[in-house]
Length: 328
Image (cartoon, rainbow, N blue to C red):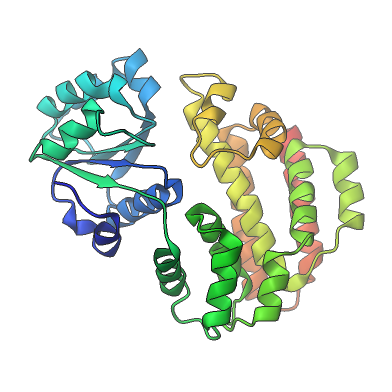
């Protein structure tokens, strides 16, 4: 069954079959569908694979074929797929019964065997993810900022123009807005300052040096970087985002090199950040990442619940702790 992406955005339950193919150049939309599936299936264990995993070993196929009635319910995400996986998917689906299997691809042309199979088979669903237009981005912003005051035409137009109709970028901007405007009152002056602020670049540099474990540069940046108390939740969100992306690489690199794992990340690492990100991935493991995430979580709770503490001091301590964990 072929579905329009906007239909599935409004109601993910339209996908009745056990397997669905999402394909297209709109990576931001595909990521949104992944989040919706995870939110709908919180009791299920989500297992992430890339096509290369399935083509180089039989672990996935054996797991589907030899499942036990007592196994935990699982959902499978298979990313970066193309026609190379077509015959294997046919075999897998012949054994899969209750398992939910979701495939994610970039552009598949009309001659694609995989695309044609999912479009014609009654037991399969397929959702093309084409680029957004102004109307779909406006709808996305309106839904995400529902309950916020000040979301007028000027704010909407500013966000649309700034995003260049790129869903991934607009989602990043919306995360900043939701984190920064805690009182849910948006004004255009503060919005423009938040979105087009060079300070964000300075905080990113500070974050990167701390995660790299560069104590000398981190201490120097702590002295020179302008930090605002009201933006601390936003700064923590920036750190958490990097830690979680590093966790993704750790998971993906179990069966491949760090470089190969980074190349499979979606959305991809920006070319300017790739060297530092690669250096960070070489020194962080799951234990370190979980330890750091515990500290960011504890700090976020402390900041929100304790009005008497010096928030900038405890945030700077977090930065130094990250540096220590990186070097541990």
